Length: 227
View 1 (cartoon, helix red, strand yellow):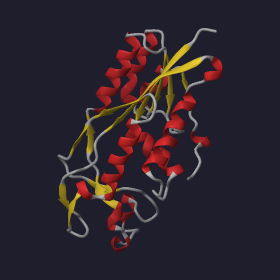
View 2: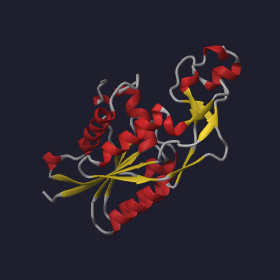
View 3: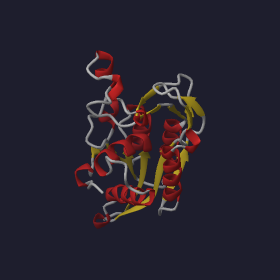
View 4: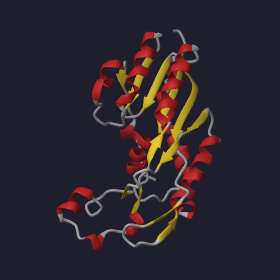
């Protein structure tokens, strides 16, 4: 059987949100613990029993917030560079850089609209219920409200890296962990060049044309265990 080389591409915003909702809903895991669990999830996509080997895991994320802003509920000035979330994410990135075969690709955050939102959603922290008046604003936990900046440059880097890996024949099986239909051109190119393109949408419905340009769906979401 011919050997197949696997390159894994991880959309961090999508993956971390879905992974931690199951593995760490209370956000209690240490960065080292979370990084190792994430890495073990990714390499499940490499079927060594069928002569597959890992080429590299590409992880795409943006640095955490590091500027100051006034909280929309408390009006308190927040220095995000000193927040627990920022420190945790920096630590997580540092640990991931030392995991085998992992390459981190960093984009940047756009704060043009200064849009705020909930870090974790539940029955109380739900924007639709809030604007309908079903939730008393006094019940909102200010610590669960944060700026929600837009990621810039991540999708472009991811698409370019898929093209580069495929065209250079560095891998002939591409695994994309994302739910974003913007990666259709990358998927089409990979298949044209003879690579197999597998999508892990973490159990989510695949929207747009992406479902037409992949060779299969594969997820290990049901094997994620809580810390």
